Length: 152
Image 1 (tube, helix red, strand yellow):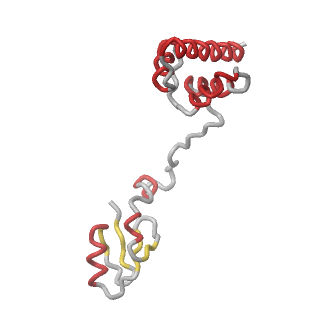
Image 2 (spheres, rainbow, N blue to C red; image 1 turned 30 degrees about the vertical axis):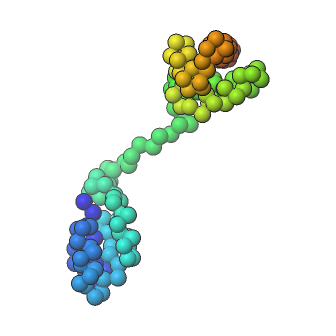
C-alpha cells in the first residue's frame, strides 16, 4: 500500500485519505510518496500506484532487480522461428499468394502443423471451397519449401 506525507504539515496519509486531508489542511499543496520521495501536486498522486518493492527498499545491498527480457542473446522459440519463416517467405512468393501471406504475417498465433494451419487459414483468411483449398495447399507448400531451404 502506498503512503503519502503532506508537504505542508508532514502528516502521514494512506492514499484514500489524501483528498479529505487536502480539504482540511491549509498548507497542503502537494503530497510526497513515503517510499520514493516524489512530490505530487494536486491530484497527480492518484496515478501513483507503486514505486519500489519492499525487497528493493529493505534489501538494498542484495537486491538485483527484475530480470529483463533480453531478446538479443536468447534462442528463438519455435513459434518465433515459424513467424520469421513466414515473413521470409514474402520475399520470393508467387504473386497470387502475396496478399494472403501479408495477412498471415499480421497474426501472432499461426499454427505450425498442416491440419491446424488449414483450419486456421480457411477461417482467418476466409478461404472456402475448392479454390480456397487449392490456395491453402499452395501456401503450405510454399512455407514448407522455405522451411526446408532454411534447414539446409
